[in-house]
Length: 309
Ligand SMILES: C[C@](O)(CO)[C@H](O)COP(=O)(O)OP(=O)(O)OC[C@H]1O[C@@H](n2ccc(N)nc2=O)[C@H](O)[C@@H]1O
Ligand SMILES: Nc1ncnc2c1ncn2[C@@H]1O[C@H](COP(=O)(O)OP(=O)(O)OP(=O)(O)O)[C@@H](O)[C@H]1O
Image (tube, rainbow, N blue to C red; front, top):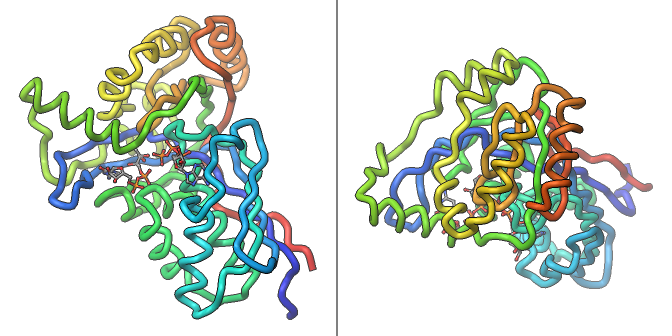
């Protein structure tokens, strides 16, 4: 079979339904019990052979995306090329729908998407385990971009165990004006704990049995009672206005309101797509966020959606 002239991969955003954070490790990372759920907001990464590595980006937040070698899509292409002794002479185009620096792992999604796209373009024949290993070298959230669905991330979040889900969960996301830096939010979490004398708990936090049962049962009300995010106080400390976004969604009838990962996107679990529309309209009218998006999870991980001959 001849190699394709271009490959497009679709890759989802994530919300963390549980994010339990231990104290800082010696390497500066924090051990996590990170329960990821992929949701139906997607970036598309298209890779085409070119004279040298080049990146372009389209979409509402495209101006906030770096187009140099620091882009996770470029880093993924270079890492795969390096492993297979070839050059990464490709044009990577990112069609971006995932909010940038919003706590929804958009950059990580692009890393996973570019890796799968280059793998298909070059026909490297890399195993799933090799691809996951490269993902983990790129960032803690990147392996989950490849697998999607629902998974428990341990270690710094890169050691994944797939989780069973018994149904579809509906969400509304309130996108904030401006992003938050992930290291700054972890740093603020450490600072707040030290200042208040809060014990960061066990060296390796555990997933909540009630939360895992709710996911397995597809029970949105039970999931709403079990969600938690240890980074939420830190995100609120750095972005106090987030409190009014969370309150607006709760008042509008969301089952649960929480910060997505390191924020500042606010995530609202709702009973149904119809309830989602009501909550979305109330959030849009509240003036407490820049944009509102509905989505559902679990969503499929990185998937080749087009392969041009
Ligand atoms: C907040 C989450 O999005 C939740 O899924 C992730 O933990 C962040 O994952 P990520 O963006 O892929 O982060 P990485 O690129 O691996 O690390 C960026 C920085 O975040 C902090 N970091 C990240 C992951 C982790 N378990 N502990 C950390 O302290 C570190 O300061 C690190 O230097
Ligand atoms: N492909 C990419 N898309 C967006 N940002 C990228 C990309 N590659 C690198 N970055 C850099 O990463 C930073 C974080 O962007 P990203 O959208 O991944 O944040 P995030 O969703 O908060 O991440 P996470 O949830 O994994 O902590 C951006 O400010 C940008 O400088």
